Every structure is written in structure tokens, then in C-alpha cells.
Image: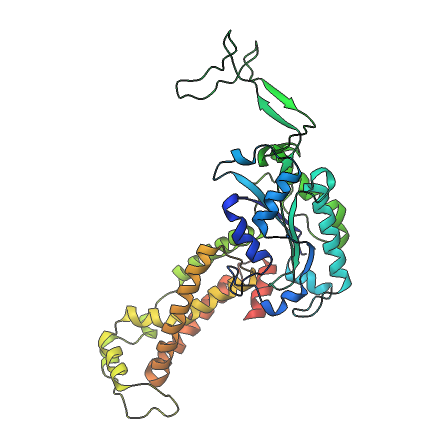
Length: 402
């Protein structure tokens, strides 16, 4: 069964420009490797910024009379992002086909999702605090991506302790001291329906249930939408911090990577499947290798010179490891943040070059090709043992890819 995905993340003011460019596809090259600009015209816009994300943020705060905009600290949460989606199988069952206009069933799902989002995060049930809302069909899995300002007109303020002259008392560190009542409890003042609104993620979610706000959000979505589409609710009673779809996928990938590393540690490097250094030294390169091109005698001699059991087995398994990691990322619709994506992309490019070079050399020599095939068979056998330990859902998906 597919599950509902409703995730929320906070961002500081410094993220406005970069996120705006990605959301509205202002650049050909994006931080997100899943974006296919050839399909961007299929995206459905519910609300678009007029002059960019930063200008929209300023306008929203001004229109809603937010009084603490200029007092926000550099790292304070200035806006939030919400993602509503499910897995690709769910949308394919509703008729989704990548690159084609979405069927009415999917458009209806996202219309309901957007209405739900406005009900949950909209200021007084309106979109006046929404910066941008777009359904992206140009990525691996369709999803509604919505950004908004967490504005409140009701919040709690500390009552500060004062001396007989009305001056606020401060601690040794210089911080104002909060007043306490006769029983020692901290005193708070509740501001209600204020004309001067406040940008506060903390107050925004406290007004919706505090620590249980995430659970209640998931419950309401499931009752109003998820149940009708036969979507799983997910872990009930969870009070974990709100997180984006990207973070959710990263967590799943990290868990699967841990299993993958366990598998790699279990792979036996048998001496019977690896040519020893002395055996490799006996290989005699010959002029011309049939259809193999660009393999020089110098490369073969270099391989012989540097060959040790460790080097050969590392290169033999390099291709399989790369394929395994690519498979896991595709299955989990990997959406990485900018820093990690850049690092992985560079590593993958370098690894591809190394693999191509190694394959060319190995395939040019029958002895090395035989060694590689034997080692690969043993690796695949261990991988099948690993797959049998996975839950049935993941196993079926990975077997399709294999």
C-alpha cells in the first residue's frame, strides 16, 4: 500500500532567492537533479510570485502588517515549505505517465491537497500568507510544493520582572528576567487577535497543538483525503519534527545504505576467485585485441606492475557498487540538498571514468575478464541473500530493476 506524504520544513531569509529560482524554474541548471525542464510546461501553478520569492515575502509581510520583520535574526525561520505527495506507484495507478499531461484524477487529488494546505497553514483560511504553490510534474514523482509565511495574530509573550520604578530586571548575563507568580510558575501574557501580526514558527505550530501538531496534521489529511485514496496513514502518534520530502527520502536512503554496507562487509574476497600477483605477472600482452580499441600495451604493463589482490578486487567490484548505489537512489526518488548533490555528482563522474577505464582493460585480457566474471557472480549471490532479508515491498521494487 502506498502512503501519504505530508512534510514541512522551515527556512531562513537567506534561502528565499535560491528556492524561488528552483521553484519557478528560472535556471536551466538546478540544484535538484530530478528536474527535467522538457516537462516543466506540464507543471500546474496555484499561486506564483509576482517579482521573485524575496519580493513576495516582503509584500506578504507588509500586507499582513507583520511587526517583527526587521527584528528577525539571521538564522531565524522566515518562511516554511510544505510538500504533499505519495510514491510513484500511487500516481501510476491513477493514470500518470511521465511526460504526458496529468489525467483528471491526479489533478483532482492535488486540488484537494492544495485546499487542505490552505485550510491548515493559510492565514485565517486564506492564501494571503502563501508565497508560491506549484504541482511539479517535471520531477521523478508528482508533488505539490507550497511555501508560506507562518504568521499569527495570537501568541504568548513573557511578562518581565520589574523593580519598583518599573525598570526591567536583568540577569548577570544581561538577559531580561521573566516574572513568576506566587507558586513559582512563569507568567505569560496572551495576545489575541492583534492588528500587529507576528512572524513566528514557534507560535504558529503551538497554536495548532504544539508537540502533537505534526500528528494532528497527518490525521486530518488521512481522514479528509488519504483514506478516500486508500493511502496509508504512516506511523501513528509520531511527534517527530516536521521534515521535507527530501529529508524523508534521505533518511530512507541512509537506512538502506547501512544495510548495503553490512552486505559489503559480508562479501567474502576468496583467493580462489582472484588472480595472485605472480599469476597476473605471467600475462603476456599481445598485439591487437580484436574489437577492443584504445587499449595500449603500456596500460597492460602498468596494470601488471601495480597489480595486487587488493587493487584488482577493488576495481572488479567498482562497477557493481556503483550500479547498486544508483539503483537505491532511483528507487527512493532521491532528492538531495545542494551540497550533498554536488559532492555525489563529482564522485559519480569520477567513478564512471574509472569504471570505463578498468572495464576496457579487463575486457582486453581473457584472464582478467574471467576473474571479474567469477567475482561478480559471487557478489550477485550475496546480494540475493541480502534482498531476501528486505521487506517484501522493497524486494519487489529492486527485483524489477535487477
